[in-house]
Length: 385
Image (cartoon, rainbow, N blue to C red):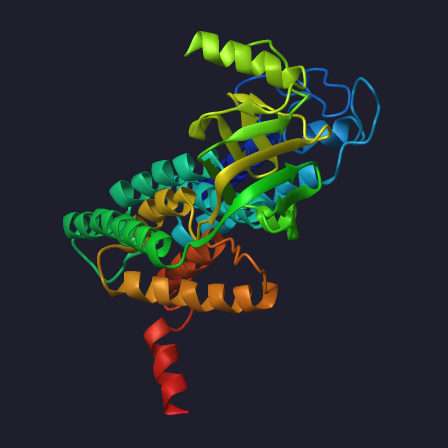
C-alpha cells in the first residue's frame, strides 16, 4: 500500500468521524443540549448507543438504518453527512497533498457549512463553529500560512499578516455593529400593554390601537419595559427555584404572579421579552397560558448584527490576512448579502450574514490560487461594460 493510499484512507476515516461529531453537535445545539452530556443516544427512545454501533456510516448500515433498541428508522442524513464530510477531507487532501493541512481545512470548511446552515435557520451561529473556527484557523496560520496566501513567500511575514487580519476584521465589524446600533437600530417606543403568547406579541397602545407581531417577525428583537412596570397575568410561573437575591421581594412577587394576583409591580430589569420567551424574575413563563404586562414606556429594539458574526470574523479575517483581501471580502459579502436581503424582503430586516462572510472568505482565498477571478478583476470587467 502506497503512502498516498494510506493518507487517503486515514484522512477519509478522520473525516467520517468528524462528520459524526458534526451530526451530534448540530442536534445538540438545536435542542439546547451540552456537547458532552448526555452521551450519544437514539433521538426516539433516548437509549444510549453502544460504542460498537456508534461507528460512522458502518454503524447505520449494520443496523439496517434502524435503532438497535426501538427499531424506529434513523434518518439517512446522518450517514450521508458522515460520507460527505469524509469526501470533503479527501478533496482537501487532493488540493493540499498534506494530511495535517487537509484535516484542518476540511474540519474548518465543514464547521463553516454547519454554522451557515444553523445561522440561516435559527439566526444563531453555534458556539462549536466559533470555537472550532478559531482552533483550526490558528493551526492553518501556524502550520501552513502559504496555503492561505501563496503570494507571501516568507512564513513569518505571512503569519503576522494573517493574525493582523483577524484582529483588524474583528475591530472593523465591532465598529460597524455599534454604528449600526446607533444609526440603524430600529426602536419603537410606546406606553401601554403587551399580551404575549405562543403565537406572538400583541401591542396595545394607550389610544386603543392594537398591533400583532408573529414570533417569526419578532426574532432578534427585545422588549425593554421602563417605568411603572406591571405584570397582569403570568400563571405559568411556579414558586420553585426562585432566585435568592434579593430574597424577600422576589419571593413575594413570584408567588403573587404565580397565583394570578394582578397587577404585580416589577422593577425595570425583572422582565425580559425576547425570541419566543418571556423571563419574569429569572423564571421562564409558559406562553401557552399567556403573559400580559404594562409599562409607561415599552421599547422594542431590533439589532442589525449579532455578536456571533463579530466573534467569527476574527477567524475569517485571520484566514485572509491584513491586506486588500479584507476589503474584497467585505465588499463581496455585502453584495451577496444585499441580494439575499432583497430576495427575503423581511420587514424587520433579519438576515443571516455569517454565510455571506464565509462565502466571501472562501472566494478571496480561491482567487489567490487562481481558481476564480479576483474580486477587483470582476469589478474592472463590470466597469468596462
